[in-house]
Image (cartoon, rainbow, N blue to C red; front, side):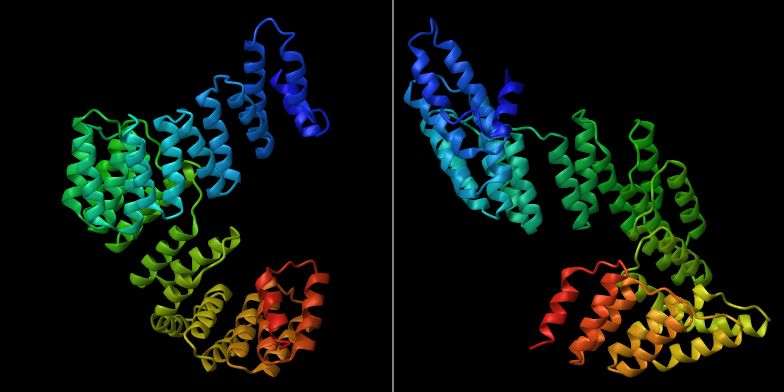
Length: 460
């Protein structure tokens, strides 16, 4: 029956006068249970299909007819409103639930969560105070919602207040409570408090999940206690918990900080063996670790792997590489003296790093140097150089390089087009910028809205 109702509602033609049909037939039914059950089902179907006005009409009908309304159906409707409607509509319906004595601690927690997500924590607490007088008290899920909000606000006093309320109401912690508190103490680098909370969790017989272990492992890595971090790692895997990318990320960061790059390599190998892909954060951690340990070639190798995986370097990546430029230049010179040639990826990284540092003369020297070694600049070399020329307002030089790419048969990426179009737009050369924008679209490249906004702005 419910599937039939769903199909009919989606069709949009069958329920124009459903309540009229119920009204006409109700006096012919031996029992009102059918009508109640049918209305309840219809109420849920309307909620599932986001037909909130129709759902409220069914609710009104049931309320007006004195039918018992299932509080679970109200919960379904409230959750749908929370996801797809406005705060005003949610509060409005919840107030009707209060009036009809249909509120449970679970529906109350839904409203608390919604208000907290809107940064209306104080309003949520007033709402709970209002319902306590009706015998509906907050449970551990309600308290966890408040703790999470205050953690985000970094409000120590408010967190302590909530914990005291939990103690007063004799509400015990669950795994989520412990996770939130351990994560909070860990982020504040309160090692003793975090470890104490972790031990208390064990004493209460609560099985920690991967999120709890990630927090406590990450804390120990940050304070340099790698022995404890790896002991916790062994403990979690011994309990059958599967390490996540965050687990490995914390350990890799920890070993990189103390210069144990061979341990970082082993962890990366283990990650890949377990089918866990490295993310940008871990790639950046490795690059930073190699640069700190004067292993510039290895850092460049990581950069190559990262780009081959389709992961774009961010500002941190480039700043890290740029911070090692002096060391890299020294290594380049040393390699040249020994008859070894740096590869094109190393040159490109060095060129881009100098541009990020605001040095435009050095990248040109590096390009000439790599050409003297018989290496041809590729699309990455040209894109970095074009970006540099545009940054410093040398548009003609940038256009010259852009044309060179075509002459050499090098493909232009979205990054290349964005650099030159942005440069032209900022220089007030809107017609040329729009022409290249059209060319980029014709080439099958799809920019984001920000580039078009920049072009439109250049017209004024």
